[in-house]
Image (cartoon, rainbow, N blue to C red; front, side):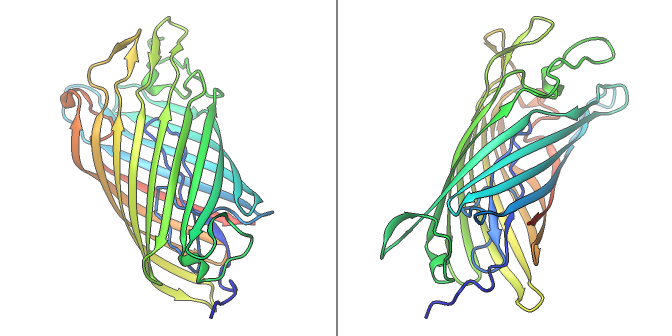
Length: 327
């Protein structure tokens, strides 16, 4: 017999995905029912008429190779966000990122607010009785065992300083706090409860950038980003009276980066393919959610790898932390 969603206390934002330039993705999860990844998108929309506030930190610690020259030390990508459920099947989001890209002493450290981002998420489901349908306002716990899907799309707004200069007056596009022009993202996710405790989440997404001419005359187009992610979430503990849930999560992420182009020519030491693994935990308490994961590259095929210190695939680790609340 189907049970009402008395235990579905809140849909909570699961840390928006940060691409290698700090672009956001989407995801959400519930106290009871399907679990959520730490970083990839999952397949739940916000409840109609409810708002969500969230904060995320992505701290990347890089491997260093040359003790005689300053190299990228670490990067911290902060992201604040607001979401709103316009309908049970459509949610909208606004993201405000802050970047801290720090070199070793003697290098160029860049800090500041980056480009704002807007995103929309459409949710739907499939079951054997009713076929395809948009997410309804209410679902039983049995209904949550159906396949759930989302399609999401977004764009950045060129609000960050794309032409920030270092102490020598030079512009480094890789350290800039904006793209100069809008970037665009598109993706889809799927989720299925494999058992009352175990959830499979899948995501495929892409980000595209436009060529921008900087104040010093250089023309740069960042490489395309394509992602394929999968995660298993297992409910370790649930206490309905205290409205508490604890999940263990194992997430795998495949990332393909195209070459950056300068003045129309592909740049050496950019782009490649890599796979990350990230174990982590996600805790829910009433309308709050906290997630923590440690991500490391386990396989890389980088173009001119020896030139890519401080790039994706060259991390010692990435620490992913997020906290959110539904209102």
